[in-house]
Length: 234
Image (cartoon, rainbow, N blue to C red; front, side):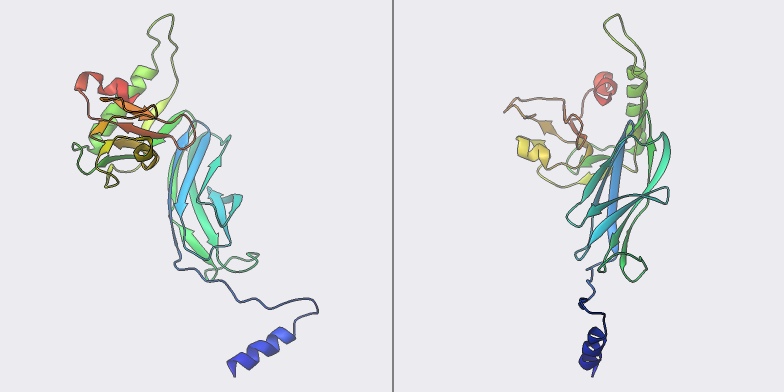
């Protein structure tokens, strides 16, 4: 009976139209992370299957839509200030009218946009202990170093380094970076590891830090003596 009713409804559609079943998602939750470098914001998410498009909101205003294959977006020239970002996934065909029945929602994240650089910080579970207070002290001292000109061949960089969220742990790899592949497996942000023996140029033992320029803003550092940790943080 239900099948006959569905066929009858399809038959009643205007000429040239066709009947499509609604897509379904495996979950209604989207995991969202992000970071801001000056006026650039990068958002990364993991979404359910069955998404037709991802809709990006900044302070509750729709600013961009990306396709179902996307898992990140970079937003350029964002005005300075604290921004709240959210990603919504459209589940049903068409996506013209979004309701609780055809949407997947992410968590909200707050980012400081402007001359403030916010980093997610994590450590490998085999690396030295690292607390929120440790990170805040390192980034505050690193900010002080960057804001001062140390001579005629130096310039002051008006920037503030900040921690985004709590320090977390990760278990990817063995805690040693011995190849470019192992470095690429790290998440964006600052990652504390035990050793770095390759920073993209082949084996070179005892590297203190390694990072990308632009793009994913991915950084790996090792535990160092207190007298150089602030410079390394900067």
